[in-house]
Structure formats: C-alpha cells, structure tokens
Amino acid sequence: MFYRDITPSTIEQPLQTDISEVNIMEELNVSQWLLFKKPEEDGPLVRGGHADALVVHATNAVKNDFMYQEAFLTTYRTFISPLELIQKLCMRHQRFQNSGDLNRQRAGRESFSLLVRVVSDLTLTDLDNEVLQILMEFVYQLLCAGDLTMAKALRVKLLERYQAKMVHNTSINALLPSQNIYTRQATLLDYKTELIAEQMTMLDSELFMKIEIPEVLIWVKEQNEERSPNLTEFTEHFNKMSYWARSRILEQNEAKERERYVLKFIKIMKSLRKMNNFNSYLALLSALDSAPIRRLEWQKYITEGLKEYCALIDSSSSFRAYRQALADTNPPCIPYIGLVLQDLTFVHIGNNDYISDNIINFSKRWQQFNIVENMKRFKKGCYNFKKHDHIIAFFNNFDEFLCEEAMWQISESIKPRGSKKTT
Amino acid sequence: MSYAYLFKYIIIGDTGVGKSCLLLQFTDKRFQPVHDLTIGVEFGARLVSIETKPIKLQIWDTAGQEAFRSITRSYYRGAAGALLVYDITRRDTFNHLTTWLEDARQHSNSNMVIMLIGNKSDLEAKREVKKEEGEAFAREHGLVFMETSAKTSDNVEEAFINTAKEIYEKIQEGVFDINNEANGIKIGPQHSTGNSSIPGGNNRSNGNGCC
Image (cartoon, each protein chain N blue to C red):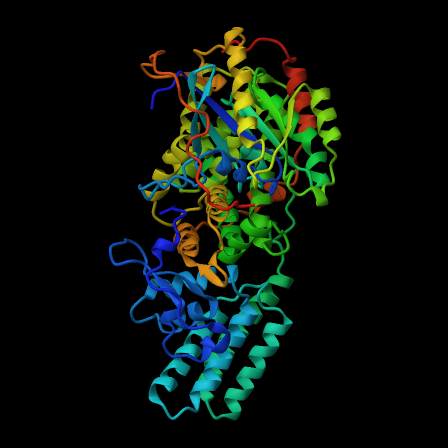
C-alpha cells in the first residue's frame, strides 16, 4: 500500500493531446488525460492525471468508481483549492446545461451533483467570504434560469455549512461545566474510576468529532495551527491532560499518596481501554511513563503493571500491537491521532505530488485517503455518557499543571539525581 | 540478514527540519511497504559496516507526532544513538536545540551518542545559522557535529555511520552494557564473524530528492 510507486512504467498510455489547446473542463471524455493502472496491477484504477481531468472523472465516477469519488473529495485540497474546484464545477454545469446534446446535459447534472457534495463537505476554514459569494451568485443564477429544485438543494447545503461556521465562532467551551460548581475540596480519589474515565472520554469525543479530515491533511503539509484549528485543540488537550496527571502525582508530599494516585490513574487507564479511548489512555500512560515520574521508586507491582500497559504502544514493527488493537476495535473509539499524522507524514515525504509537469500523482492521494479512512470510521460511533458537572469542574479544562522544570525539581527533591534506582 | 550488532537510533528536532528526509536518503529512499493492513509505514533500517563488522541500524522517526510532545519523549528510551537535527535556514530550530538536548539527556540512558546535524546545507543563500555556531554548540555540549543535505545526500551517510562508529567504540571500551537491550544495542542472532564485508552504501537509487 505504501509504495512510492509511480514510475513511467505504470503509465499505460502516453498523454496524447496538447492540453494548452483544450479546456478539459469542457470535455466529455477525459480518459486521455488520466493515468490508469496496468491490467496486471492491483489496486485502484486511477493513478494520476491532469487536475481538471481528475475533477471531471470525479463528476462521473459514482456509477463505476465510487471509491474514487470519495478519495477525490477527501484529498482534492492537496492539489486544487475549494474555490477553484467550485468555480470549475459551476462553469461546467453552466456550459453544458443548455446544450441540446443529452450526454452533455447529463454531464452538466453530474457536475452539479459533485458540487453539492463539495459544498456539504466544506470545512469551516474553506468557507471564506469569496467561496460564499461565488456560491450565492450561482444559486441566484440557478433561480434566474428557473432551476428551482437545484437552487434549493444547493442553498440548503450552503446554509447548513454557513450556520455550522457561525455556531463554531460563537460556541462556548464545552470543556467547562454548565454551572458554577465549587470543587476546591475535591480530589481525584473522591470520584469513581469509571465516572472519571467516562467524563474524559466524553470530552475527548467532543473534540475528536470536531476535527475535520482536511485539517489533518493540511497539518501534515503546513503545520499551520490556524488552518487546522480543531486538530490543534485536540492535540493540546492531549498534552494538557498528560501534564495535569503528572502534576497531580508529583504534588503529593508522601510517597504513599503518590502511589495511590498512580494506582488510580492505572485504574482509569484500564477503564479507558474498555471504552476504546486510546487517546486518553495514551495521555495518561505518557504521564506515568514520563521521566520525572518513572525515575522515582515504585512498588514492583506498579512498575510491572506499567510495562504491560506500555506494550500496547510499543513502537516495534511500526506500532504493530496498537494497530492490531485498533483494527479489532469497533466504534465508538477514539484513536491516537499522532500515529495517523506520522503515517501521513511518511507518505507525504516519500511520494512526489506530481508524476510529471501538471500530472498529479493520485496514488499518493489514495494512500492518504486510506490512512484517514481509519479516522473517519471512528467518527461515526458515538458515546452516550451523561455529563457529570462536578467531575468536569474538577478537571477544570486540565489547565492546572506544573511546568516541566518544576516537575523535574520536585522529582529531584524526592530522589536526588545520581542515586541508584533499586527496582 | 546477519549482523554483529543492532543499534537503535532516534531522530529528533523541530517539525520540518528534514528528519524523515534524512532517513529516507539514508535508507533505500522509499518507505518499506508493509502488506498487513494493520501495519503502517515501517521504520528505516540499513546494514552498514564498521571495522568490517556488519551492523544493522534501526532508526525511529517520530516525524508527524511532534505536536503530541508529551508522548514522543518516551521514544528516547532504548536508543543508543540520536541525531539531533536543526535547519540551517531557520534560526528558531537552532534556538530550540537546548530544549531538545535537555529532553534527550533526561529521558535517555546517559551513554546515548548524540550527533548534532545542521540540515539543508544546500540552501546556502537562505542560511540563518552559521556553521561556526553549530560547531560551537556541539563543542559546548560534547556532541559530534556535521552539516548535511538530505536533498543532495551530502554528508548523510557520514552522519549515520559516524554515530555508529562512536557507539561501536563505546562498546569496545566497555561503556555500554550490550546485554541490556534498554541501551538500544542488540547482539546479532547466530552471528558469524567470518561473514563481514558488507559495503557501506550499495543500494542507493536515483530518485529525486524529497525536500
């Protein structure tokens, strides 16, 4: 699957017509601008092609190459902007709709169908003023032409996305409790393990659902927090939770107390694992496994137990254990996104975006598509836990944690550097 | 393949400094396909020879996971060598070296060999960090230093192999406990010392550079 595999030998036929003379967006049959796999090769049919040809192919791929359209919709932003794509589809629809030729009329309708899909998949950052304006104008043109059903269909989708954006911009932070609750006296040990795990999972789930797949692909290319806002929020949440857990352990003065906290976190992890929440599981594991905590003296049953928990995220054979566990899991589940990002990074770096001038390497997009499918699969499941305001208030957005320097100082005051570890 | 020792490496440094590109350049320029669907992209590995001994280098690359900074540090453990990479065209990646180094030192075993790499030496016109600055930093912190270009492959072999040489020397001096796998060193399975002449860089293809 992860071949870096496009070489000239995979090209079945040379690209024939000089594209500078034709507008591919106005053609019915674009196969001469596409690259297909050889008959003896496995895998998906389309391996590459001119961007416009890939667009046109996506408009009529529903019948015979359904997966292609899905892969196109997931990855097109890596070679054409939503704005350009929308403009091209509008143009193709307009060019063809009044044609006397039935095939052309059908192609026009297919362009429109794809346009509706594109609009309903627009992310919050995709939907800027320019895109909005172009789509509104297009709706208006449809109305003027008397295509009321189409105009309505498009307008409904557009409004849906627009409202989602408005809601997002004004939404209150879901991680905070709904009322003012005074929890100063409470400690982690006061709450039931199961309940804590449920509330952690609920918060994770909310953030996970907000992540839009294109953000993930963009992150791998650009690492731009503004263009991947929900992914950034999710990652930050992970890190904060890990530092929060470390702090709760290290701020205990007595060794016995620290041990009780570690045990509590281990129990929570066990519970998280049952809920298929790999994200919080790993955040807590990374806390217990962090150097300032790991270097302290722990009872043997704790260190032995931790080893078992670490086995899940053992990096050998490219995280085989974790990948297998994930494959065996049914939704609802919150996967560890770090590995998705790593796989995407390797695919991005190991494969060229283009096969040659203007010819997009679509094999690379298939690989990206296959990786993010694993995220999509889990976005379908949903947890049904009841919000527990006291616990959410106790978490306090995981904002209370010591800086790393302070954690090291505490760790070293408990056990000075250079003293031998006995376990 | 038979090897005398296996050394585990880790590549660290800011996002975008070219960690995976270095790995890609050093291994066979492609990420190994793995046929089991549940398995992702395999980490890079390559056989080199140090003083005629075949040595397998297995390299962990955490590229892509940097944002999950609370977890990536646990990968330091169990590594015998680390390539600490910055980008000579981005001053901030050089400024972050102290943090990376401290992290690495705190989380790894104390004998880990760290090589400082100033990558993208092909982009001389955009250079923001002088070579002398890299050298000074390395001297101050007791690291080996080298400028590389993952694009032209300049010094890439040397970076990985020189690190291996240092580890090998430490083994000869008895500094490393080779029976403890936590040190990132493993003795080869049924290794025969007679089978020794593995060329250092024979499987390079001519793909175009990735960065």
